[in-house]
Image (cartoon, rainbow, N blue to C red):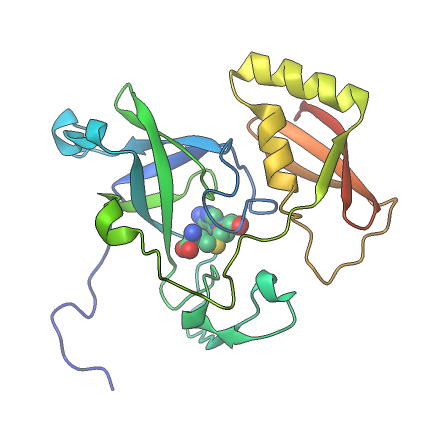
Length: 240
Ligand code: SAH
């Protein structure tokens, strides 16, 4: 039973937002550090858009970000005790608190990301698993001696997921390189690392003719599954 407590209805206000390479949820890696070429930046809101608030961060390589799953907000009165993590093929349920699923009692996410630098007051980050526009509620420095636990285990997700093979058609490869130059971003690496995670649901048997697509930066990436375990990237073009 809920007890009377002054913090029961505590409200949380975003201190910033993420500008991310990922423009839609589909195909975002399921954890940070799986796609190191996934980049973005954090724009801080007033009054935290002040050098005083980030003084000392130049000494830090990685950050913990607390954020809001703003595109997975719980519906009023909705209670989900169990979820189907993609990791288990999408057909086995585990407790919500045993999973990193986005649909949670409070839509709060936690990701550790690399801090590549600070430019015009914005924190440049990589290895992200965050959607564009994600509200950031707190930033903390990663503390290796306390946060890296060599004896930790999780039998549900002990190793990073198996990767699948990615190939590009010659045209798609040229576009990846050209668009990467135009944007000043590692587009080819991002596409490879993102798709190697196999974004399609594990239970879905791909029809080799079906074309999948997703938006990254201002680009539309299209691919298909010519056979099990292989992705062919067929085009990368500016999205309309
Ligand atoms: N590392 C985080 C996120 C795990 S789930 C944590 O453990 O809390 C990762 C998935 O969250 C991604 O695949 C992406 O599809 C989804 N996601 C990222 N940002 C989101 C947002 N703002 N709203 C809803 N879903 C988001």
